[in-house]
Amino acid sequence: MISAPQDLFTGLGKLTLENSSGKKSSTKKNAGRNSTSSPLFESMIRPQWDMAVKPFLSISSPDTKPKLSLFAQPGPREDCPVCYLTLPESNGCQYQACCGKVLCLGCIKGVIDEQIKKNRTKKKKGSKSNKLPSCPFCRKPVVASMKENVSRLKRRAYNNPDDYEALSILGYWYSEGQGEIIPQNVTHGIKLLLLAAQLGSADAYASLGDAYNPMLVENGMYPGIERNILTSIDYYERAAIGGDMTARFNLGVLNMKFFFDPRITMKHFQIAASQGHDEALEAVKSGYMTGDVTKDEFEAALRANYDSKTAVKSIQRMNADLRKIEAGEFEMGEQLDDAVRNMGGWCFLSM
Image (cartoon, rainbow, N blue to C red; front, side, top):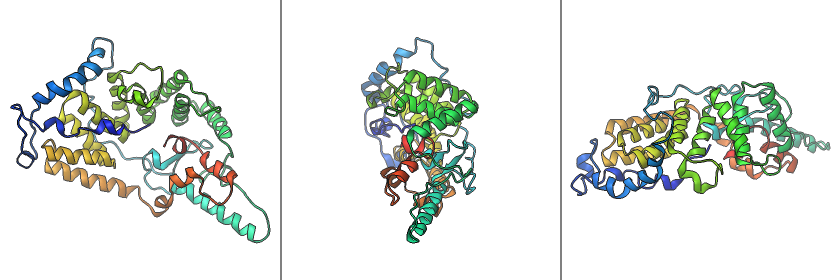
């Protein structure tokens, strides 16, 4: 999935900068209290509502009432099955199509570094070696091309129909297209994402939320899909309940832009911030400055954000620079570079 574009974030905190008389309120005086925004609602927000939300209210749409568990703190993330540390968010993980496990990039880079060292040792002894690294969990050799990796992932999904991670990745790849290897087929991609979502994939729900989000039309994603903000919010809510912090942040943005309830908006941002989302933390800070977040809530978000990041931190993970992997900055030649890019699932292709 993708994060909300920066322009969605523009205007954060401005919903309460004017009171009902149209005068600017004192930030310092009103810190920790809510204010109203009638003039701003009529002049700026009402047109947004009429354009993006109102057209969908007369047709069949998902129930937009807050779900009972929507604002519950998400449960703990799973551990990496190799290092047994809490898994970070998806941009710090890698799905392995060989065994169906989700591993952290620290463990992925560990086997790469180990193989590089072995190959260098053999080279010094006069023997030519360019052996590829193996999966840190199942020790199967890494595929050397994107085409092989797609074939492996398809076999994984076919032989394990309950593997929602494989289905979610395939759905994303078909929706986005992967050049000549996977021609873009949005309809098929959405079907796979729906199947993965029904099996419990928060990532799939988040991608579906992106697909129907009217604010993402300009990005050219998911062409041919009729955008519906209520459908988008429904999928984002399901993803957020499943623990997806980017979907949670997007919920806060959409609520801020179209539903004008700073209490709900800031609640979403606070939960996302507690999961380690930095933009959400900045949003909570802005909410504190405008009076929509109390001092205690802001301090709690700061502490939770720090604790969340600390729980997934390790030296090996800090050294696993995804940008270097994508750029192919290794000394083993193009063969290993390609293998590293194609070791598994979503991470190297969806960043």
